[in-house]
Length: 321
Image 1 (tube, helix red, strand yellow):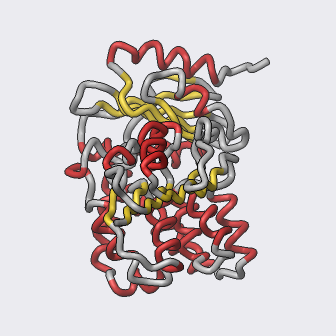
Image 2 (cartoon, rainbow, N blue to C red):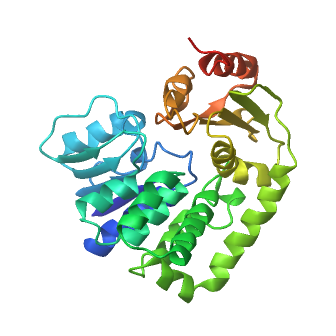
């Protein structure tokens, strides 16, 4: 009995696509919206083998330990903060937290570039444009194809943001079932043009709504955006943060979206030209986590909004020492 546990964003999807193309296996899928990361607790301890991709080990430590103790073999690849990595002969862990990598690229390295196009889709979706562009150039990928991979990465990542699956254009598990049929992203896009167009049109509509927004507060080095309580805002929140970061590489950004629970979902982007500090800020709050360049808080209590904005502006000051 095997399980594939993965983040529902572009990075998690394309990491699993690569791994299963290289190692075919029909496993039970465990995934969800991007911020649904405590996924290992959904796996029964009787599982024989589990593959875990692009979810923080630190957020799943208890469930991971239980699986290992019960005799489950676990393959784990990720680029988020891990906390202490359990010492077990049943754990095959590949954790790399540097700012210029993602899980799709970790898998790409393990597979020696065998499905490089899928790895690039994941990297573009994770806003690692500089790394992805360099790798595309190294792989002699022509510009039109590179642009297609970038766009698909954006669409897949956009589709992962929401309070629940109802907010998404399509559930990540269903999307994965379509992606995994093809050795290249181009083959997928040729086979399912209507699906790609549906994602593209929704992404463009939601992005146009976001472009009408202005920051709630900030300065030349840090800005905070408060989005409205709407499904389109929850969907575009992460990609809007990426776009802001790309347009203003010397500025940090925080994008906050109200959730049906009354809490705020927070996306934090460190300046691209100095991609550090995001996860350290996020982890000051109970449900925060991520990586150096991009992090988030899954459920910031409304009463903590002022505390967060103050901490954010102090963390990325206008005149750092």
